[in-house]
Length: 486
Image 1 (tube, helix red, strand yellow):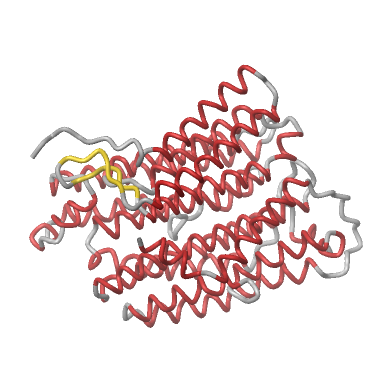
Image 2: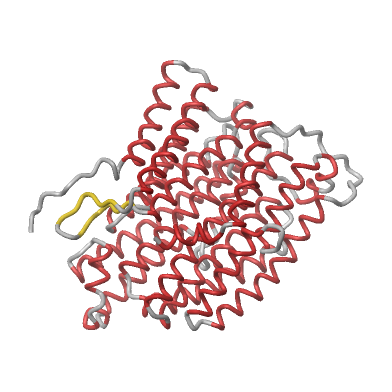
């Protein structure tokens, strides 16, 4: 067996484009020192990354950095979907950031550079074929966010949120690295597919060290998706971060955690061990998230707790793996990733609606600040209401409806009827706060006059595009499922 690794630059093209965007942003900010040019460079790089991912993904699966049959980078349909979605989310967050950047509280060059660096991690993450590449990609996606959360000048809440996020993420990374080291000690392998083959040996599964290693890896990645009991950092971090950064945390960062967890569960870790654990974690996550969201009065905290509940729905299909056959497991993997795609589109639209209805540079405010907003801004209010209804899983937001149906169908196909019942009950529970906020948008204005806000064009455009994409995806959910399963 040759020890020389092959390098396929075509497979690496989306990663080159994403990393090149970060370098380009630095140079434009240094040489031109014009905020508009810097933002345009970042946006252009994100568009180029989307196109590069689509072109490379259309050509079939490509593998590189291979030793024998084990490859560290595998770019196929699923990797292309993740790369394109992360780049589109970066583009959306740039649009949402216009009012914030114009206030001068956040340096434009640093903001765009860090966002492009994070995009690079997300692009590589979808194609990671071994534990080292996976963990490094997760950290490249996450590390810039520590700074982005606390980048707003003169904001104590931002600084506190950044410290909270940093401390918790460091612990999560430590657990994941320790678990990966123990897996290597047990098996002698790091490539995900090879780990899956080695851990199929029951003699290895009976070792206590294997159980500890699997537990640490799953626990470390569960931090990234804010799954219970590793969720407490999310509401405080989201609420203290600038609104566009909170939107990115709730979408791209959560998507990255889901992709990482899905990769190790699908290829490396034994489903008979991880299935029951993830089923319990999913049930607790969706239940705790929904129950606490019912009591929230601050807008971003409500969205944060609802995203915790949504993480439970995303993880639910993985809980059916212990009792299902290979075909059902493939459907469960596709259902988990497809739900994540539907969720991030609707979540981005929800944050875009909140940004549009709040003064430039302000936080998310309270729910009372949204009272009657749809009467003052009918189109923005309608977009936000559509996103909330979609997150609840109701028509006419078909993306959210099909997301719930996809998860329940995968659970029933995997002989996990009890978990499907938990999902259904929690979906009903979620209606209470999603519909309450949607109704509040159309309620008569209160005694205290709301501040006059004129939604920025870029923010309104981001809301419109996210809504349109969610509508289109709602009418063609099978396309997402096919890409997620490839």
